Image (cartoon, rainbow, N blue to C red):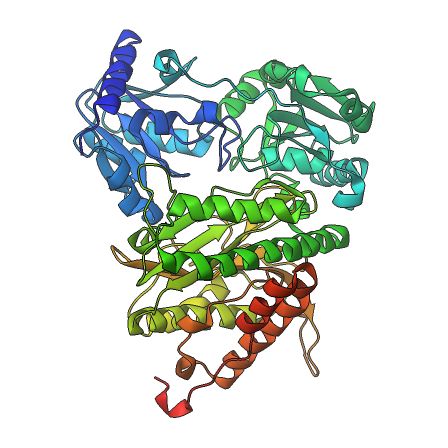
Amino acid sequence: MSSPVHAERLARVRAELAARGLDGFVVPISDEHMSEYVGAYAQRMAWLTGFGGSAGTAAVLPARAAVFIDGRYTVQVRDQVDGALFDYVGVPASSVAEWLGAHVSAGQKVGYDPWLHGIDWANATAKALAAKGAELVAVASNPIDAVWDDQPAPSDAVVAVHDVKLAGQSAIDKRAIIADWLKDKGLDTSVMTALDSIAWTFNIRGSDVSHTPVGLAFALLHADATADLFIAPEKITDAVRAHLGNSVRIHDREAFEAALAALKDRKVAVDPGSAVAAIFTALEKAGAKIARHRDPAVLPKAIKNDVELNGTRAAHVRDGVAVARFLQWMEDVAPQGGLDELGAAAKLRDFREAGGGLVDLSFDTISAAGPNGALPHYKVDETTNRGIETGTLYLVDSGGQYADGTTDITRTIAIGPPTAEMRRRFTQVLKGHIALAMARFPTGTRGSQLDILARQYLWADGVDYAHGTGHGVGTYLAVHEGPQRIAKPSGGQAGTEEPLHAGMILSNEPGYYKAGHFGIRIENLVIVVPQRIDGAEEDMLGFETITFAPIAQNLVETALLSPAEADWLDAYHAEVFEKLAPGMDDSDRAWLESACAPLDRAPAALAA
């Protein structure tokens, strides 16, 4: 693949670096808040390389450059990034620091933007370069921005009040929780940079980041329960100002760095997982006493209250009606031919909008036909758009942002008769999904301890999937939310050792991907709930499934299901019909009843 546009951009960046006396530069997919999803103005890696994934980094040296991606994007990066311009480097097998250490020369200076990287990354990379006699240099302004002629401006959209009737807890009470935490730790102030934490703490929502209802802001929370909020003044309406009250001092976002300089001798909590290196540097220069702590909003945000849980349950029912109507439409239309991935994604959005209450999608819909389904985080565009053909599998991973909840669901369907291999792999994925859905576990159990439940049936055939099994989900906030996660304990992924608490929402999404052929994923969201077990000697937890849409029964090899698994699927489909039927008309309801009918169980003797 040849990419003249990106070759020219790479040359311009190298020229800019040379003019600044730099030999290299590191370009992450990141913003000043270390967000997972970033605004258009912060898509510097995509501009430079053409890579369209949500996680990755590029590094540029005078004669060599590289892109660093994890296992989700191994195929995608080769489709989108010119291998003649950039080396492909997999992480965590390697890292930016290792690659730079292997390719820099003594005396060279590699730049980085301290507002886009964490302090631990900066320290580790500086050490790797120093070992070669090279230097990592913090830049005062980003060189990509200097050569990106049509770079979008940050969003100036106003923020809005998130009503306590939806939040279930007032912003005053939330600030009091953080103030009590600070006093308990003997601290004066907490620096809050994560956009979803700020939105949750102040009960505000915005539209500055695509698909995530947050506003660009920083905050300082104090032990006296007051706060300083740093946000562009044009984003604050009179209603928001009144909602925040006198205990929240509002400043321009540009005043944040100067405010850090004023925290001399203060004991300040900073989260190295979400606060960029520039914040640590500013606090150190100011003479503040830095205490590394996790953002104090993270855990209370993850443990939803009853109002939030009831809201998200309601949102999932409305969303389920839309998804079920889409699945019926696909069953009718896709076999006729002429449908493509973009058309299917657009139709699914139409169904969601018709159901009412949709504010936005919760992420770009993964509408993946045939071999594109083997790319777990595939993103369809005009270039990659593929027709949905008979004899293939179609995978659709999608979600909606509603004022009362955030949804995320994946369904895989067969277009025409599926092969025996498709059915076997689908059923193994389903068995893993059911095993996790039915799990009961003691209080204090971590996500890493549950992950094997979802993989065991695939492992029995010597296959696996290269992504986590479950991520946390917000309520009208980020579709990927920490601190909880269900995944293998290795690989440096945060959250796998976080104990699960009642009230947390997670996804349950095992999958299987055959490169060049098809992908399978079955995803529902679940709530961690207490479990009453007769004779139990420990407090136990389990999962309540809150996503409702039919699972394709023509892909289920019923002989591979145990009686308990078959019973779970029948019970799940009975609940799907009960929840969704009232929101459907007669013809849709008839289709739903058929899609949710009990399994036609095969003889047990055929089971493998």
